[in-house]
Image (cartoon, rainbow, N blue to C red; front, side):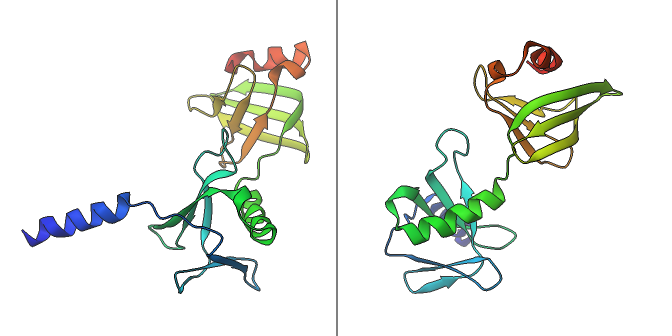
Length: 176
């Protein structure tokens, strides 16, 4: 019976939503990490995670402990509701966690032995990467927007397939 109560307590903790507000304090550490003080408790080196990274990037931001379990401390319902300094601190962490170069031009895509080798120009410069053709490496977010995850789990975005030339779109036909 005591074991059941333990599981019920754990389940209640896991499903409880705690909201982080402007009363809670975020601060940068000297090492570039972020600490959170909530209700007088200091959480060091918190993780900042978007719950809806592609559809609602500034809403519902999960703040998690820096541990193997990454237990959620709370949720920021709207990043824009926080003061500018806090927004800057959290946006910096989000940029680091969600670094996603945008593909602007496709030079070549070569299909070989179950892998596709991309040579592209992104908003961060020229890049070559590979994806496994048997995996779900290419995700359609809409009729014209794609996210591509390479073998090293780096993300690349094509914001509008229709903005590419016809020749570039033909190279993508295998994935559309």
